[in-house]
Image (cartoon, rainbow over all chains, first blue to last red; front, side, top):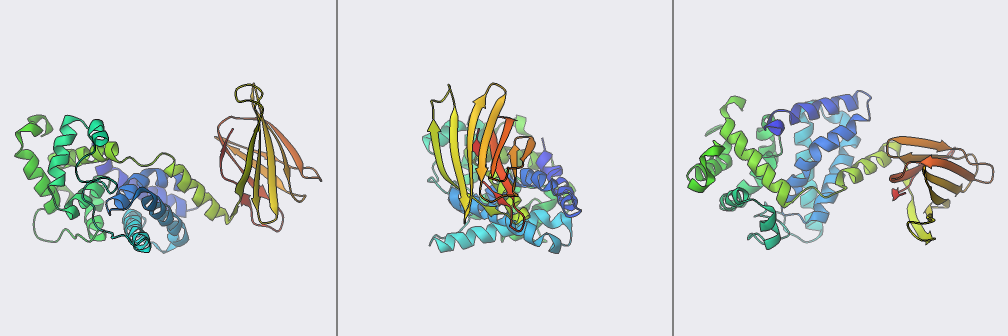
Length: 193
Length: 149
């Protein structure tokens, strides 16, 4: 159940190291592993789908241009997250849009549309209510780190402009807050613990 | 940060968050393929040809022949595809001699060497997404967008 929390970072680092060691086919594995994380990074910054796609694609092209300058292969994930975020903001400015951590979905109001509601289970709708009660920055952060490896949380939080800090719970205040409100909600249910 | 301070409850919540976003805002279909394609072009320092024309002769489902032209600069690649029982037959023509044409289908690449007039023919191409890479001496490779055979 925690594939993304334990395996993603090391597997990405390994694929990237192989790619740099002369196995170009491993780049496709890296793309497959990290594209969901990067998509949600761009979308969490309020980017419309077209800008998010461009930002993700540009980040990958930059990576192969600068692959040699990334000292530690383990840094590839956070390097891509930072690059996607910066590229998203740059493209948004070009279009005269304000980039910011998104509340809910960039293309729809905070309230779920009927279509969005239809794809969610009752449990997911409960989760959505608790998530949208958080600050936009917390929503954006949780959305991105849900796709990351645990080992990358601290760096990615920093990359998103939300350093976890040296004081306080390791899980970070956003996750701590979501956890508190979910645990206090009787409809969330005991089977989640 | 210490990994062991995040427990199973945290991990389960993040799994739920990920599942919710997978359903609400999935990665667009084809995005990964478009990224891989762009990376291939960049890695080869290739030029990207444009799809110029696509005409449908015959009727879909019966005698299916399509004619497609790709161009970039003064270079052109024209192909006609004919659907056979065992895959697709491609007849093509490319500007300039001494070119080689790679037909890149899913899981296989077939290489054609056009004759001195630029004509070539490839049989038994698997159906599905296919693109072409043309190598010419003294030029950057040309890569075409994918088409569905």
